[in-house]
Length: 299
Image 1 (tube, rainbow, N blue to C red):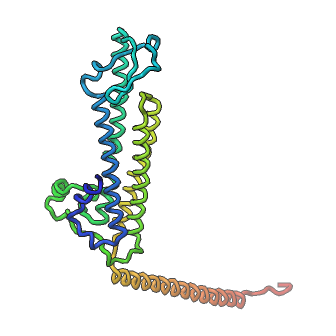
Image 2 (image 1 turned 180 degrees about the horizontal axis):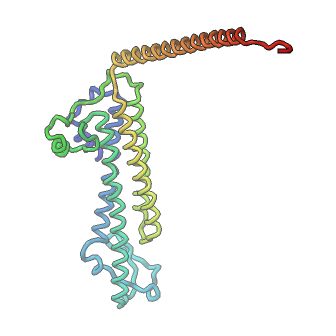
Image 3 (image 1 turned 60 degrees about the vertical axis):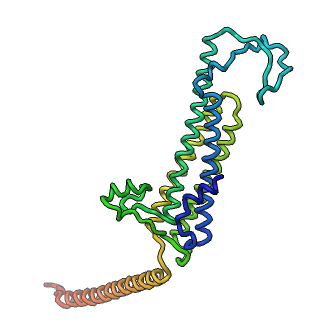
């Protein structure tokens, strides 16, 4: 089922370099995508087999409910429920009904297609962040040929794993990967539920389908937007080794000390300036007082 397909996608990746948590996210994410794709394709095949084949309308008989003969006496024939009745001669009504049914199931197929095409969006980004490859000239490209064409050569297509189990896990990069996985799997479960609802709709009810389509497209927009936002957040915070973290911490602390020294010197200079200004002001006031001639009486 999905598991074997996922394994083939990542078989050339050295999973032994990954932490168990990242390996599980990679494999489980691929499995969920494969299972959902399998269910989607089964539904599409069913719709084409039953309702979207060229001779569908020729296989449909329009029967008036008013002239059903003992409708409670139904029979199972070739796995389908049948009742005895009289075929209507309303050709135009039959054609309109056929068009309505075909249009309804085309809408179902379009909804399923939208789900299928949305699955790779988060899956590609999650896989790129965990094991690569990544196109360094355009991070939204996940095809080597396209990346090479944009780059002008093959140097922009990085195949190597970006992370390994030797890297400290408490970094923004790994937290963002977990967020992408959680958001993605949450949306996959919603898509699964919506496909199950679609499968349960045995009658042609356009209003139900419209509501389901609206909910599904809203979720597709939400998950793609969030995955894209988190993907770039991870790229802006690449994982580093313990030594690099220690060095970064050292320089951050040094920068903080230098900033504090600058602030202290600035404060000291300000205080000295104010002190001197006060002394000068007092001296000026004293000089002015001494030089002032006070007029005597009668002058």
